[in-house]
Image (cartoon, rainbow, N blue to C red; front, side, top):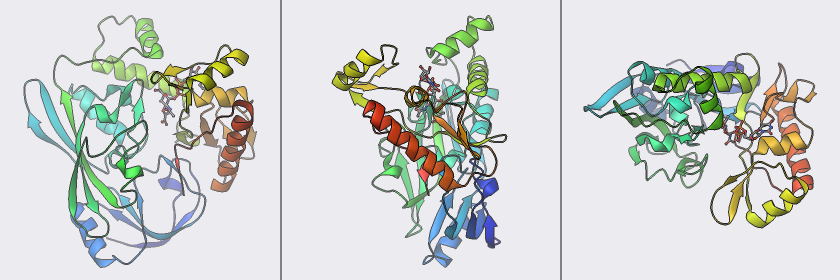
Amino acid sequence: MKIEHHKSLKAFNTFGIDVTASEFVEIKSESELESILSKDSNKELFILSGGSNMLLTKNVDALVLHIAIKGINILEDFNEFVVVSVNAGENWHDFVQYCIKNDYGGLENLSLIPGYVGSAPIQNIGAYGVELKDTMVSCKAIEKATGEKHIFSNKDCKFGYRNSIFKNEVKGKYIITQVSFKLTKKDHVLNTSYGAITEALENKGVSKPTIKDVSEAVIAIRKSKLPDPEEIGNSGSFFKNPVISKNHFSKLQESHPDIPSYTINENNIKVPAGWLIEQCGFKGKRWNDAGVHKKQALVLVNYDNATGQEILELSKRIQKKIKEKFNINLETEVNII
Ligand code: EPU
């Protein structure tokens, strides 16, 4: 294991923000992780996975552990289903494609989500009607302070909308090293009710879709709306979709009859933040190299050399405007560092 000093993190965060880490080490196995935790236990540690859900606003004055542990293993193999365990450093989309190739169903709607497998449970990644929690069996994590291994079952993770125990009670305490999923081998349960998926499949003339068809439809939709981090720096949705009361929603509907919504329960309604941001005139706007994506206003972008501070300031201007116009507090989805 080689510890590097003053390492640029530009290539390690999908926003492409150029800050440095005072110390940086790539971790390729669980034993390397254990050894660094026992040796450098008194150092400040910063866990870096795929860097796809963070905005770095300053240099990181810590030992950055880049969790790059690779490997996929079949734990159980039955006629109907399989349990697959994946190490934290595998690229999420490559893993989904491995499942499609082997005809393991359940993750196809989560195609093309950037990042690594290890950070997927932290925010319970989700798209097009499916969330990680629907198929995840458990995840293995190492406690930073003690080096002890711990298995978190699906229930232990207390998953919610872009939320889990790792963002709350045990925030910053564990390093996820492995995640396992239960996936179908036949009679796949497809989730194609999301409007754009239905449309994409119809356009292709597919009446009995396979998981590969669904994955391809999702890839096409994402490519048409969301910027590719390889081309324009971004972290996907910058904000969560806010949940408001039914009363509040009814009032907004009077002045904005076309406001889109999803019912959560009797009293609460979720409104798409992208729509709110577009209504405030931010969509497609750019200030220096920081901007709001032209096809999806929920995504803030770094055109080239924006600083984390510039993106953060833009996000605060958006939050202020949404509060003034709609009396809604937008919460960030990405972690601000
Ligand atoms: N909309 C606008 N203007 C915009 C963007 C969206 O009016 O600029 C409207 C759309 O017309 C639509 C609604 O908002 O009526 C919802 O838009 P979309 O289907 O694009 O989904 P979203 O709610 O903006 C969420 C997730 C995405 C996920 C998609 C699909 C959150 C915070 N975001 O976005 O997740 O891919 O649904 O399931 O829940 C991510 O987390 O990084 C991410 C990309």
